[in-house]
Image 1 (cartoon, protein in one colour):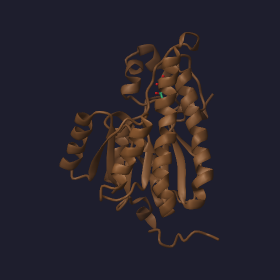
Image 2 (cartoon, rainbow, N blue to C red):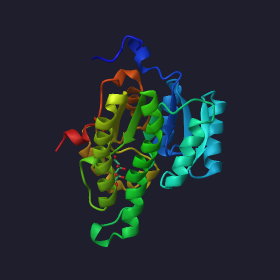
Image 3 (tube, protein in one colour):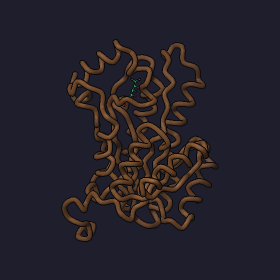
Image 4 (cartoon, rainbow, N blue to C red):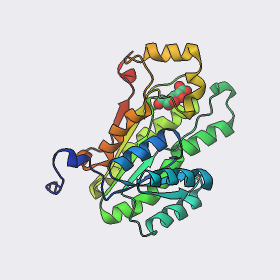
Length: 265
Ligand code: GCO
């Protein structure tokens, strides 16, 4: 039995997010903020998430000034009860359910594995992987009832490749790639498409120290076939694609936006 796709608008309409609501975790700065702005410009009403009220409120104000629909969700994605209550607050605020979830929140705590503390391991796994499970579980409850939803996990080229001092981050992002597949196969029958985006090297808060390191910067430009760092806006297309009806029969995939890095030896 094939799903009814006749209601999906043709052409660019397939990428139109009007009438949809998108929660992007960790969206007060960096790639999360860029993705939130991109989804809003594609028509979605967005929910800006962060842990501090001032930062979240300031970002929501900028969206409203730009006449982009935005609401605030002050929530620590690693706090289970906080996530349960936070998702419920949004789902019941009268501005519509969460149709699109972008699990973006992530941190780095680099160290050689032989010197890495369990605290550094636990914090990165909890923030970059476990939070995606918790938030997705809570948001999926409504999506399963409505038999519709989009979940996009922000993975990394480190879902497949390692680099010294990033063992906790790579383990988390590798796990997130497999969690993407696990969610996809469990929820595809309820018309929930779960996919992932794997960014290559982008200049953000997470990579600030790397960008300013001349040797590392030269290595990235040589190692990346496109011979440059990515511009965060270059991730928006993949996010709109996975958030829209243009990807209605795509499940469990990862799309690398990396200038060809993972395609090369
Ligand atoms: C590093 C970088 C990478 C990138 C990102 C690429 O330490 O090598 O921070 O981890 O930030 O993960 O997707």
